[in-house]
Length: 288
Image (cartoon, rainbow, N blue to C red; front, side, top):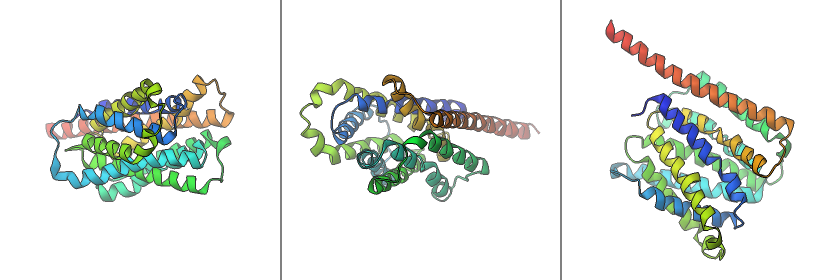
């Protein structure tokens, strides 16, 4: 098992890789569902190369978790078609609330008052970041975005549940399932071959590699810790879009981004220190 500090570093790297999705998807002129399906298929094939010692005794958790994962990928794309990207990201990143509420029951991992404080700060920062773009329109898109947030929470909970067996197998199965559901859209997209390089980058580096890192890290951190720290992706994603497409963020976006960055960084540091001093306390007790 990794030291918690190293696991947290892997989650930061995961968020960084995930966040490239916004720019790469904008650069790929295909149907969004075709992109989602192609990306998932490439990712599934790539991740299959890293599967080791699959534990099938928890197959029921793997199957249910893969359904949550596939729902996350598909609902996020469809919601983006029905409401604004700002609404989708804000509502999907309500997921730490669902992890906090369900994690103590499903994983028997107690959520501390400090965790709730940082959840509040995180969502407040994301709200401010997208304040100028939020709208009450698109109720179906907003509803799907909320479901996407619940599905994302379910993905993290089941990955953590499978920490001692096959969290990566769950993601591989979920990617194959998402690709199958999206098959009619990307099989009719005749221009997929023209954008294969971008799709390969999306499948391998934006989706595949980060889930390898996440599946390693999730063994050493609680579900609420994993999802709070990885939520940095919520502001990094549009930040790269601002930079690449020379868009200028508004004042509220800057304030919200700073709040999210500081919140996630402090939370990561405090989580590492908490584990460090817990270990030191145990060592001291053993020494007498």
